[in-house]
Length: 398
Ligand code: BES
Ligand code: ZN
Image 1 (cartoon, rainbow, N blue to C red):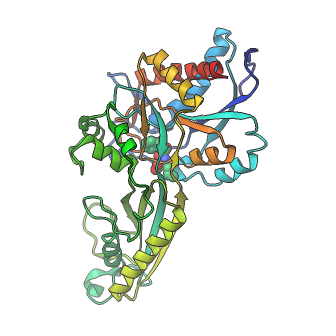
Image 2 (image 1 turned 30 degrees about the vertical axis):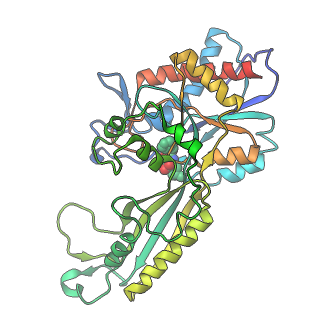
Image 3 (image 1 turned 180 degrees about the vertical axis):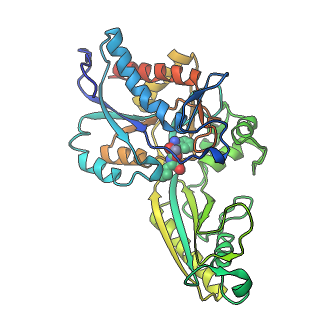
């Protein structure tokens, strides 16, 4: 797809490999609360580029191509050898990609020196960061099946075990309103916070106002920056996402749904293992369900279980990125972890045994997965310069 790249003769000949990110996106409907059509890219008066996937992850993906195009048009030698991997199922757990990465570790990905993924965001709205950790995610479907078909609640209400009632009860046993996970044993493998680690939370470009801005609310569980960041980066969390099969349209419908599926996920941290999380969740739900004496049946399935990832920031890959931030933004980057998950990050690190870096373009208030997702034109353009400068800095390291 990319013709006539002039490779720099001075380069050592190894490859730098880039997973430029993913071109798939989350769903979006204008009725979710978008001000514009989510599927039409719109630039507003403040220079924000609005549209589903603008920050997550289309701007970073296309930016790698702009970097190549800029070198071609300017007649510049490309500083490194580049291998690409465009991903189209990141938002649904990267089904199948893990196997391919392992299969190709000694083939397509042979000679790769380092990996860089741009699929995350600055911590705040002003300062670039380099990201060295992500949480893992285990996604669950809890199905409760009862009557053979939907029923009239006037005729059958009070006479049958209702699947929704069982489900709401069980989902209420998963997490407290202040975020405490109720699954017994879930915290047992969480690595203790060390003294040295505490200092990492000082001096970061992050205030409570950043999270108030990003959430458009003041609904944080914690009231200090450290606690907020630790809750996001360092500890597991359990979120309830939705109920398939439940009545959700406007208006009143007096129905007893026959089968409902509750969706929830757990974000995991070192040293938690997805297999153990699944077992603990199943044991807990089965035990709680047994207490109900319900004649309905349940089924619990983990649809995706991905492990967390932490990288070594002392590696030359991070040094190259920090130098690039200094050159483009005249600033030292913050070193951050994140609460979200990118399944292939750990896969690349493990399968290739190479350092993986996350180099974000967008800001914390971009609204990935949310309504009115945007990337600021400033971040987009400076981000392209950053990716390009990073490649030159990588070349200077070798
Ligand atoms: N860009 C995000 C990952 C991310 C989120 C990085 C927040 C930093 C902060 C990515 O596109 C994403 O949303 N991943 C999914 C993966 C899941 C479906 C396996 C996620 O985290 O929910
Ligand atoms: Zn995403």
